[in-house]
Image (cartoon, rainbow, N blue to C red; front, side, top):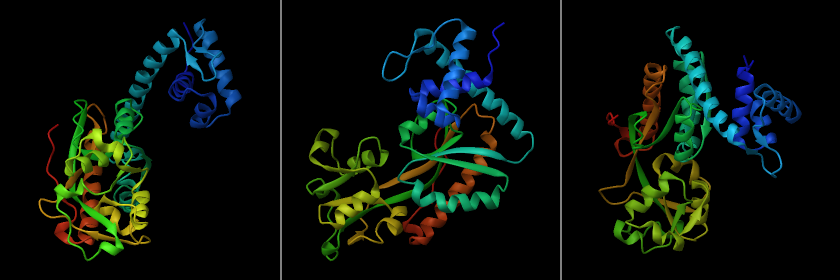
Length: 315
């Protein structure tokens, strides 16, 4: 019988995921030589190589690819067994690996962490900021417990719960503060600044402005909402940002903020998790707290014109 351990599998899965000994060792909180020793031990136990070390960046052998896939599934199931044990206590405790998209994380998380401390004092939140595609992939592979994203996601394996709706607002140079707000169909004729590809907010802005992806090469891009707003302040163009970002992103920029004409563009913020997760009932309670924090932020930004309660999304 091969004496494999969970440590072997976790270290190997990290190496397969990162494709680099240094990055994998950092993720596992061990030294690179220690990781190398563990991988050689694993190969000795299996009697076959798992890693092609001749390339500049490590490459898995055929057996290594198969083992990586099995290791991910085994580790996910072990994590779910741990989650089952946690649910037996009746209250949510321990770590919560929560993904958040970049156009929400800087604005929602500070309040949310405080709310978690009040409602779930034994919870250890581990937030991770990434674009939607990365969060969904990590969620499906068991590397996250839940994620706060813009809906819909439309992934059959995930439960979706809509929490609140939020408007987009127009950000223009301060010199244009007294000019009429442009109609939606004229925005595409202006120099529009967008987030780079991979951000769902980019796609939502393109849709509202009735722009197709084929014309985005002519538009200017930024890596964050902060960059976009500062570019607007420099007179480079205009942009759209979610309303929750206004207090932070516009406080040090020479810009003006205006609401667009009705029907105003909005997005639905929700929380998603695996349907098979043993934490499902607890995550529904976590979603309640996220919803309440989002609604409070909307009220602070102008009452009914900000965040509004969302209904249940189709599962």
